[in-house]
Image 1 (cartoon, one colour):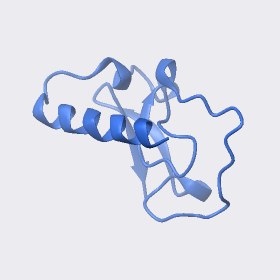
Image 2 (tube, rainbow, N blue to C red):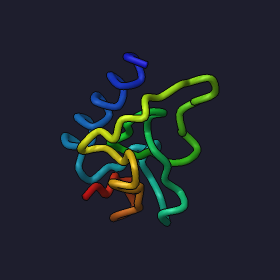
Image 3 (cartoon, rainbow, N blue to C red):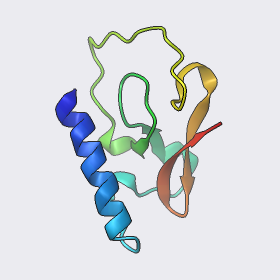
Amino acid sequence: MKIFLTTIVLLSILIVSCQNDILEELKCDSDDDCVQASCCHADSCVNKDFKPECTGILCSMDCKPGTMDCGQGRCGCESNKCTAIIG
C-alpha cells in the first residue's frame, strides 16, 4: 500500500512538471473512464485500466475529510485527465 501511495505522489509531481503531457494512467474521455486511485480513503483518481487491485483489502468505516469517503466526492474527467472532485 505504501508503494502504491508513493507512486501516486510521484505521478502527481510529474504531472505538475509536465503540464502539457497527461500520463497514460490519468487520460480519459469521459467520467466513466475514471475510478478511485486507492482502495481506501481515496483522494485521487486514475483511468479504470489502471485501477488498484482491492481484493481482500479491508477499509475502515471512517469518513475521512478530503477524500471521496461517504459520498464527499467522485472521480471525473476534466480536460482529458482523471481528477478527484471533492467537496
